[in-house]
Image (cartoon, rainbow, N blue to C red):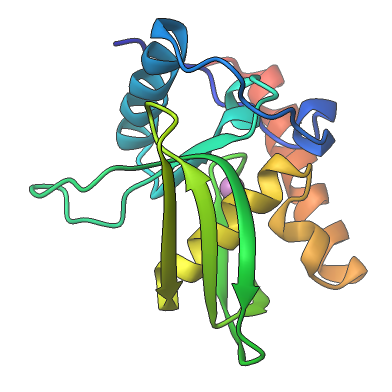
Length: 173
Ligand code: NI
């Protein structure tokens, strides 16, 4: 398995609407395994394909403890229902390292999607998993969590990202 490079904002690939997955083949299986390895290494609880430069509608999630992994592979997801109840909680993103903000989302969602082999699945989630699913589905539509917060907070975060990037360029690790 390969560790893939995670793209950081701002990058046009993170703002692009992704295309549906059509081929459930060996290349897809390899991509999913590489994305899981990359997510665990980061470490993170979710990783969407555009974050590794693949503009296709799929992501991986794992909310299990480190010693009890429970990978969830989600391909071509659709939100079927979302609760009218909303909640606000802090989010981060591997494409915006060390940046966090409170984001308002539906408390619960039901999604329909395909698994590794293209099999149709449905999942109802609330709490952290519901938040995570909405965050990752947003990625597939070119939306980052900073697009769902106030312009002022977004500007602050993007300035910090630009500063961190400048510092990295000045003193490459
Ligand atoms: Ni993210």
